[in-house]
Amino acid sequence: MLAASEQLTANKLDEYELVGELALTGALRGVPGAISSATEAIKSGRKIIVAKDNEDEVGLINGEGCLIADHLQAVCAFLEGKHALERPKPTDAVSRALQHDLSDVIGQEQGKRGLEITAAGGHNLLLIGPPGTGKTMLASRINGLLPDLSNEEALESAAILSLVNAESVQKQWRQRPFRSPHHSASLTAMVGGGAIPGPGEISLAHNGVLFLDELPEFERRTLDALREPIESGQIHLSRTRAKITYPARFQLVAAMNPSPTGHYQGNHNRCTPEQTLRYLNRLSGPFLDRFDLSLEIPLPPPGILSKTVVPGESSATVKQRVMAARERQFKRQNKLNAWLDSPEIRQFCKLESEDAMWLEGTLIHLGLSIRAWQRLLKVARTIADIDQSDIITRQHLQEAVSYRAIDRLLIHLQKLLT
Picture 1: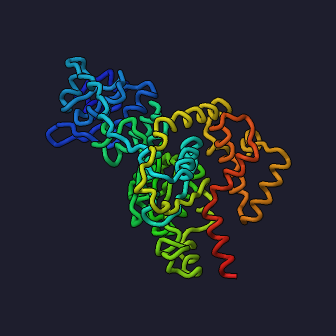
Picture 2 (picture 1 turned 135 degrees about the horizontal axis):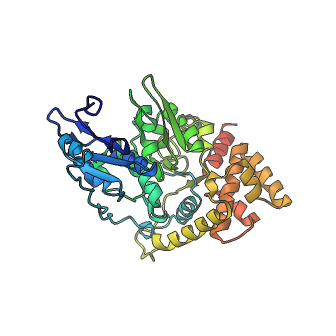
Picture 3 (picture 1 turned 30 degrees about the vertical axis):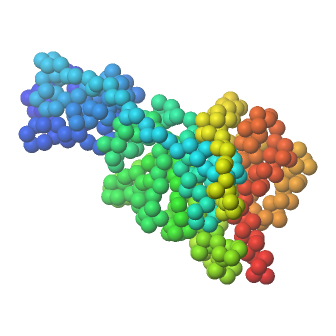
């Protein structure tokens, strides 16, 4: 407006993006999403001026074309060549809190193995077991097995987070997101929305993990709304005032009890098969198909807690195998196994004819879909990569099939009802 009314002769105005809130006094205030604006401006070869309030946020990207100002007069003086503006001081990330270690988990070797496969291939994981067996404890340790964010991933995650909680950007810089919304979270809170659509939990979990505890307690329509983003890695939000697409490429890790009372067999079971099946039917079949692995996390055997237990493998040790498996995947196909599409599955997950016939028979017995067939192949491919094997063997397939606890549970209940 100043330039249009010839109050400002600014030849450099076209070179700059100006981002901030203007107070009546002329002071500049910070706005959400400044790091996103700065990143995009620098990518497009333009320069940007942001409010000093956003200095810590934009200082993380160390962009040469980024400047800060605290008042409109300073910006005008700069554009007319009368005054220099400062660049944001490079901001150091806050030191990370000590992560939980996998060696803290007593027993649950299959659960640990499943967590390793999940981290190595970028898969979705469902943990099923009674209360107090360590499901949440296992899930909280997956980030310790995942590689650090690349610079591009860090900028993507920071840009999304700055839209809803700019104060946390510096604290969580380069840390993989781990979001764990409560089961009472609404559909809007989960996928995003509002008059001007903002990101939801699935976008805040982009490049990280979305952990859903007490899975059947979530509203069914909320869970079913995750099906498309799980496949596509993005969410499209359409409102009267705006249409926007947010990234939402996350790993889904969920935990649940096998019945309303937490147990489905043994002395603790107080539910009929009908009650348990109604409980499980809160989860739609297409949604359950999105899980590559489902593991049973049983009660620990009597006496294990009182014994002197040799600590298991540390997160650092397991992470080395995860990184080696991921390196094989990117070298072979430039993506994680979880994101292979149908043509790529045919190309990179080939089986011997006898093994293919065995797997087909197993799927028919379990009543699984074509989608489940593809997910089993991708899990088997990841197990082979952990073993540094170029081919998928029967042993790899058998292990992949063993991670279908939810299907075995449903078959068990259906047999009890017939």
